[in-house]
Amino acid sequence: MKSPEKERTERGASPWGLEILWVLYRLLGLRALHVGARAVGLCVWLFSPTVRRRAPRPAKVLHFTCSLADKLVVMAEGAHLPRVSLRPSPDADRFVADVAAKTGVFVLSSHVGTIEVLAALPGNETIFHAWMEFTRTSVFNAFYLRHAKRSRVRIHPISAFGPETVFFAGDALDRGECLVMAGDRGFGRKVRVPFGPGSTELPAGAFRFAHVLEHPVYFVACVATGDGAYEAVVRRLAADTPAGLAAQYAAALWEVSRQYPDQVFQWN
Image (cartoon, rainbow, N blue to C red; front, side, top):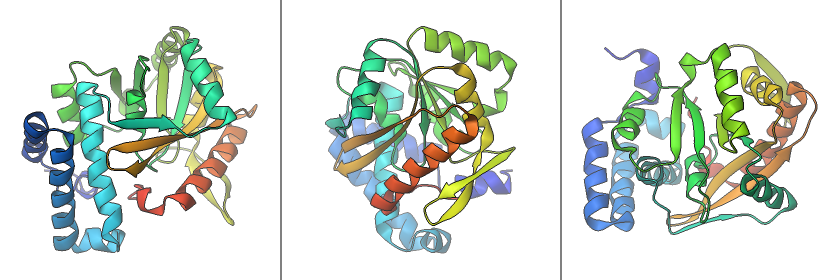
C-alpha cells in the first residue's frame, strides 16, 4: 500500500500510462508525445479537485505534463530536444567554459522548469549524476531505469547518501562530470535565508555538500520557452560558506520563479 506521502506526490502516475506515452513517442515523434501529455494533464486538472486546488490555472499542469514528456525523452533515451539553449550571460559563458574544460561542476537545481533537459544541450557530452528521492517518485524513476540505455543521466537515490557518496562525487567531478541536486526540496536540517520580501527555509545538506567538494557551483533552471524549446538560466554561486551559497541560491530562485510562475513545480 502506498504511503500518504507517495500517494500525494505520485497521484495519477501509472507505469502503463508512461509506457503508452513512450510508445506514442517512438511511433509518432515528440510533437505527438506533447499532444498526449497535454491531454493527460487536462484530464487530471478537470477531474481532480486536489490538483485544481494546488494549481487553479490549468497552464501550470499543462506545463508540467509537457515537461515530464521531455524529461522522459532526455533521461530515457538521451535524445536532443529541438531547441535547448543558454540564456546569454557572463555566468552562462563561464559555465560553458567549465564544462568544456572538464572542470567538474556542481549544479544546484530547483523545481522551477525541468533541469533534466540540461543534458540535451547541443554539443554537450557530459555525464550528469542526479540525486533524487526514489520513494517519492518511484513510478517515474522505475521508468527511467527500464529505458535508460543511451542516456548520459545517471540517477542515484538520495536515501543511499552517505560518507562514501562524497568520495564518489569527488571522483566524478575530477573526471569532469556534472553533479545535480535540488536545493529547494529535502529533509533534515534547514537553513533560513532571505527570499523576496520575506524568508524561506532550504535544505542545508545540499549546500554543505556543494561547499565541501570545492568545485564550481551553479544555480541552473531550464525553463520552457515554446513547444519543445527550453532556455537554461545560469547563475554562478561563489560564496565561501554553505549559508552564503544558500542565500545566493535563494536570490536566483526568487528571480526565476517570479518570471515563470506557471513553471514552479514545487508541489509541497
